[in-house]
Length: 92
Length: 148
Image 1 (cartoon, rainbow over the protein chains, first blue to last red):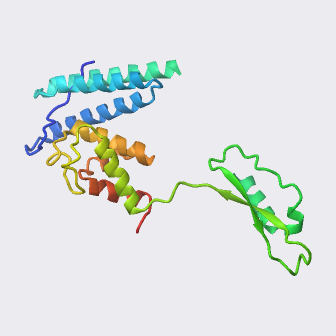
Image 2 (image 1 turned 90 degrees about the vertical axis):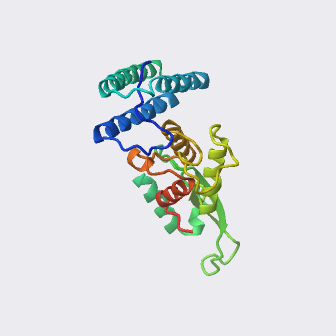
Image 3 (image 1 turned 135 degrees about the horizontal axis):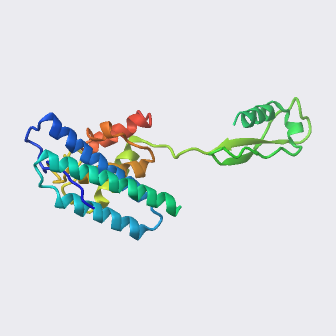
C-alpha cells in the first residue's frame, strides 16, 4: 500500500504554502479514515496488522517533497481505502 | 418511543391501588435505555386507610455521571497507556508535538483513542486544535455539558 505523508515534522515551524498545507490535511484525513475502517474489523490481530501496515507505509513516504508525487500517492491511498471498505463490507 | 412515553404518563396518573394490577412491560424495541422497575411505598393515608400499598415506578438508565475530575483521570490514563508517550513527561499542559515528541500521525491516533474512550466522534476541524491534554479535557467537558 503506497501512501504519502508530506511535511510531518515533529516541530512544525516551517511555514508551508496553502497547497502544501491542504495536502498535509488530506494525508492526515486519509490516515484517520483507514484507522476507522480498521476498527470495524472483527479480528483484533487483523486490526493490529492493518494499523502497522498503514503506519509503515506512511513512514516510508514521509520524505517526499514534490507535490505531484504526494498527490499521486494520496490518490492511490484513497483507492486502497475504498478497496479495504469493500472487503470489510463483503465480509460482514 | 412516543407510545412508551404515553404508557409512563398513564401509569403515573393511575391510583396506587389500581397499580397493583399487572402493569404492562414495555414493548418498545427501539428504546436504548434499560428499564428498571422500582417498588416505592406510597404513604397516601387518605386514599388507602388500610395497608401500605406499593406502586411501580419506571426508571431509565443513563451514562454514568461525569465530572471534570473523572474526565481528567480518564484522559491521562489513556495517554499513559499509549506506548509512544513516556509517563514521566506527561503533564496537563505538555504539548503533544513539542514536549512529548509525537508527530501528527500519533496525534491522529491519540484523538481516535479519546473518541473511543468517551464514545463520541471528534470532527477533524476540532481535532487539529487539541494539542494538549488540558485542551482535550476542556473539549470533552464542553461536549458533555459539564461545568463543575
